[in-house]
Length: 35
Image 1 (cartoon, helix red, strand yellow):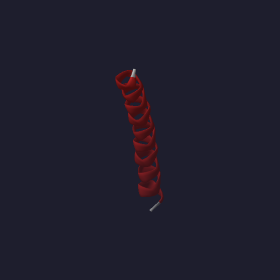
Image 2 (spheres, one colour):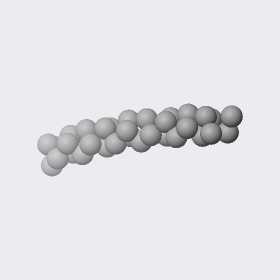
Image 3 (cartoon, rainbow, N blue to C red):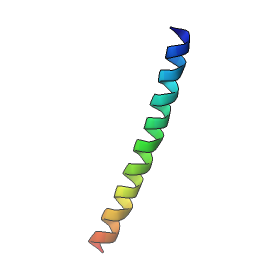
């Protein structure tokens, strides 16, 4: 259980970082479109 929990944590962290980056990119795109 400990190993799978660690693996799950790593995947969740990677997904969170990816989701944050995608959100930032979308914000920048929206700013460019509205100008």
